[in-house]
Each structure stands twice: as structure tokens, then as C-alpha cells.
Image 1 (tube, rainbow, N blue to C red):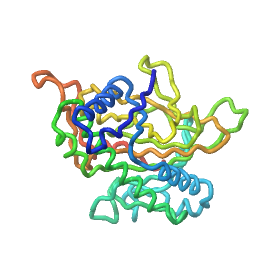
Image 2 (image 1 turned 135 degrees about the vertical axis):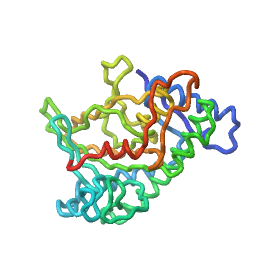
Image 3 (image 1 turned 90 degrees about the vertical axis):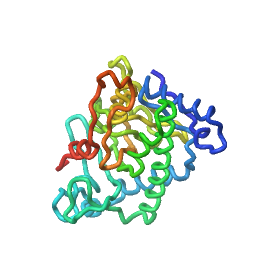
Length: 310
């Protein structure tokens, strides 16, 4: 399986013709139909932003004290500022292990106390520019996510508003993760993330230079290939909801992390998801035929996916 590299600059250029934009949109469309993963180049984000994000995440995970991490740990909903989802946590399973720091779009609620998913973000105090860099990065990816959804609409020949009206207030999630290094002579690794597909729309992944850690399941359902970082490009994959939205035409692909390096791996996925109250239903296919998939309410899927304690 080949993961394509797609230059998105033409679609972002306001001077580009509709024909040129359609060509780029069709490249995205083909990648989503056949692979479910692609590298996105020409995204308009300066490489210094990537470097700052990775450096700040590494600084937090490798230098923050136990007390500093505990101060912003994820707390259960209904308990003060907790909402089961925002802050620091450690994931430990028989087949996986990593540290994570999660931030999500903030919505107006009646809390505190907060219901699941609707709390307030907890930011590290160090580095001093941690929050400003992360918020700038988030704003850029939200704009990029909207642009890609417009490209999908063009490729699929559906009205832009069908997609944009349900992602214009995207309930995004920014995660910073640290996969611990493992001993050189270890023949098995518990530093990683179990096999899964993402439940949302679109994931943008920024990672450090480690190779061989991210594995993508090939179309034959047996082989795993490495999705290694490509300089100045984001690794992107579509999620289950985009598959629902396109009635299964776009494929959400299984993937996992199996980290075997002696050094810590930093990974920063950004989950571009629908609006909190969005209803996602198939928009393609013959209206006289029964859809392959049923619609879903985003907030129900999100809250069902959040489990506490970790």
C-alpha cells in the first residue's frame, strides 16, 4: 500500500481556477476511497510552528514534576472542574502505554460542575508560551479542516453547506502524547497505542522524527505498513464519522502505535470533529436505495468514547 503525498497549496490559493482546485480535491478523494491515509503538504503552516509544538510537548512530558502533572490531571465529570476528558493522564494497558495531555473546544455550559466533555482546558504553566503556541496551531488546523471539507464537497459533488454547516464550530480535540522509550534488548513493547480507527471526521498528526512507530493496516487486512513522518507534511487520516457521512465510500483505516526506540516519542494528533450538536447522516448514494450506514449524533459518540478513570 502506498500512502500518497498531496500538495494542498493549489486549493488554498484564492487565485487558483476551479479546475485546478477540483484536481486537488479529486486526489484527496482517491486517497480517502483507497487508503484512508494521506500526507498533506502545501498546508500553509510554517515549519517553525511544528517545531515549537513538538518542543513544548517534549518539555512538558520530560521536565514537569509529578506534582505539576497531578495538578492538571483529568478529573471525573461532576467533580469540581472535571469533565472526564481535559488535562493530563497516563494510559496503561496490557498492549499499550503512553502519557497524554488533552485540550478540547470550550463550550458554554451550566457548570461547574461540568458534564462529560464540556469542561475547561487545563494548561501547563511551563513553557510560558505553551498555551499561545497551542492555540495558534489549533486555529490554523481548524481553518485547514474546513478547507479540506470544502474540497471533499467539491470532489463528491455535494453542496458545501452540507459539510460546512456541521463543522463550522468543530468540537476539536488537541492531544499531546509521549510514548516512553523501551530497553534496547526488549523483544516486546508496551509503549504504544492499540489497534483502532478514529471515531471523528479527520485527524491531523504531527510527530517527531521517530520512524517505524505508526503502523497502518493495508487493504488486505493482514499487512501493516509504517507511516513515517515526511518533512513539513502532516499525516492525515479520516475517521468513522466521515465514513458514515459518505455512506462508506471513504474508508476509516485501522492503525496502531508500536514504539520500540530507547527514546521518548512525541506525537500530536489533532482531531477535527463535527459540531457538538451535529447530526451526521449519509449524503451520497441513490435516494431510492437503503443507505449502507445509519446516522449518528456526534455528542453521543463522543461521550460514549470517553471513559474514566484511565
